[in-house]
Amino acid sequence: MTGFEYFLYGLLKAAVTGMVGGAVIALICLNWQRILDWFASRSALKESDVNNIGFSMQERLANGEYKTVYGVFNTKTRQCVDAEVVTSREIDGDLSQIHRGSDVVVYR
Image 1 (cartoon, rainbow, N blue to C red):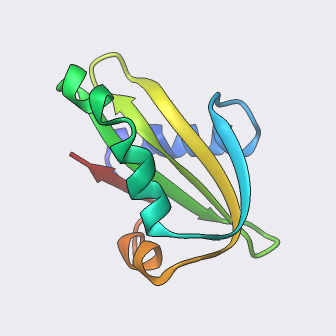
Image 2 (cartoon, one colour):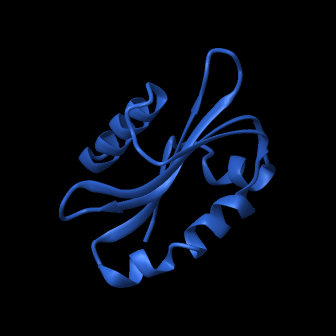
């Protein structure tokens, strides 16, 4: 993992303990389309600053559920601009494929 990915992973750990602002949602199944819709509704954040990038992080919890954090991160200020935290029993195939082999995914 790069230093940036370690930073984002730290953000995920903070989210797990409830230290990150933003919506916290519980679902039965999180699907990739929900994440795409979330990013689409925040497209102005990307357009307003070239340093804003999208990310998602995922962790499998001891109880078998998934904790997924996705949001917009500013690489210059090293601040999370907006994020959503979702706990779900399942994730769909598309999201599983995107996170296969990586807990952190960056979308530029």
